[in-house]
Length: 128
Image (cartoon, rainbow, N blue to C red; front, side, top):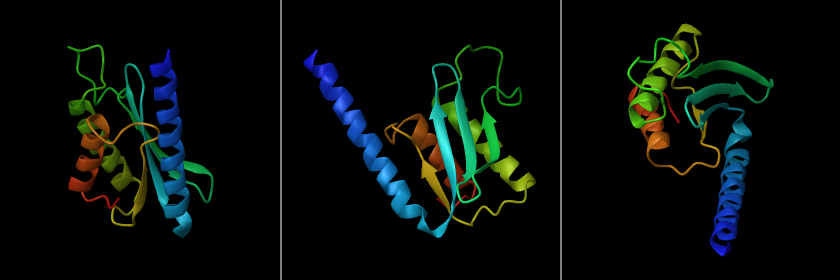
């Protein structure tokens, strides 16, 4: 029981640390790229916090990203595919890739799927 409480405290601290960094880094009014992992799917959204709007959303629920042989779409391969799809939608919506974005990973650690997603965004030219 003590280890569960310790893990919850660590998660709470990590959430507070990430949120503080987002508040500090977003004083210039940059758009925010949010990455979320659920049990079966991955989601990414581009927010304009100043206007309070979601500019673009993309997920592994899209038929273009899915393949028929798996039931879960949460591995590194699908996070890279999701990043490519997000960059494509950003280009079609005429968003500048080098405008500078804030990467919001939520409470997730920066490794695995999150790191794969961010690396693929940088590879495609998105400035994070």
